[in-house]
Length: 301
Figure 1 (cartoon, rainbow, N blue to C red):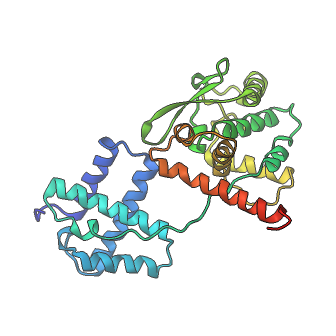
Figure 2: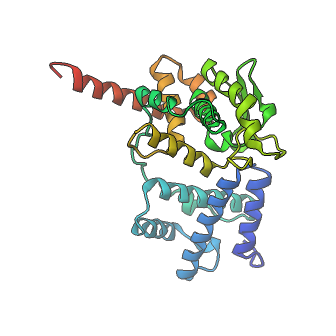
Figure 3: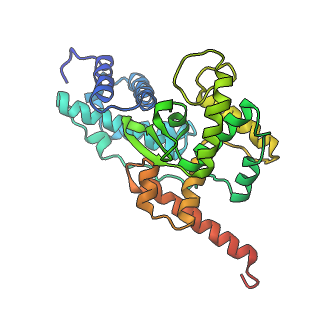
């Protein structure tokens, strides 16, 4: 790498590249930037002048420091990917040897299965609220749409009025990498949305003027944190004593679809997964659930 190009300048060029050419999401860009800045601190502490000074032994040492911090294997694997991507960029742009991190193995991920709701738990969730107040209508529509479509919370909060075709039962969402996809939803979500859009949302808007479908009690677009607050409140009301995160509804959608006979390619497309391997994890959930049910109920298990 030419001496005039400082590591900070390399980082700036790389961030511009993944933002403009790779079209990564703002969250992914932030994670990459933080991972690389952390790596730069390591370079400084080890007295390494620039990226071209790093050899395989230093790359291994860096991974060791990550383990020493008590980070999970998944986090360490992501950090390796971030730096490997940076070196691949530098190899193409500046001719830097990228062997140090290209040859580095990824730590094996823990086999941690996604948490999901059982159908009886969801039935309890769907039964909370009076079903009449604007807040209750919103909460019901929000819950129904998350479970009916398996969309991410970031996708939910970005949905605008023009993205929903309630007559056809289809919603358009903008997924990772600015990829659009159209997802069908059923009669329960359709009915909940109709009631919310006709009665609940107009009441909550309080003369605000925007197109976001889901709003908070002040009429502003609801945030991902606001969705978590809504779901936690519904969990308490339903007396379900579990920790919840909104992604559990996405996990539940996928798990229940596969359990009831949906093919994996269809579920992959509905979830917006670019790799089938991301969807396959849900087959492990359904198999584990079947095994536990068998062991708990069969007389000679």
